[in-house]
Image (tube, rainbow, N blue to C red; front, side, top):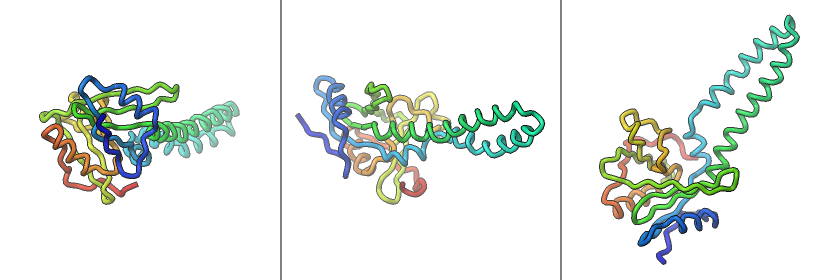
Length: 201
């Protein structure tokens, strides 16, 4: 069996690696395996929860002011405190935790993503690169970066949050090496966007 090349300084969790191996079709072999940088994934996530948390001081001040006239609002204030704390801490924790339990793989046929859910189940998504698919490559100053194949239903808008087919490799440490591997394997690869996206994490 051909041993896949591992991303630098990474050790893929055994259960994820075994799941990726078991998912191979006949004649398919893995060429590369890696994991995302959890901080990078967290930074790329939709900022909806940040908007919600940012409104907490405003909501709290209004309820506190009204609480002197309407005592029942004190209970609502307490409930909202718990809600905002749960959202502000829970959602980022879940995103970070899922990234820690995610593994990417490139085979001679497709891209694979294995994710271990909170219930222990490992879910694998697959994506077959194609020349017509819109894509982009983001390279950070430290050499890490993202490879994104856009959702065909949203290619025109270029929404980076809509890539359900497994066509996104976020925060991988050797992004240019992966670019070359995609080029050698499939005859095409995402090209740099012409900008470096923010500081490395």
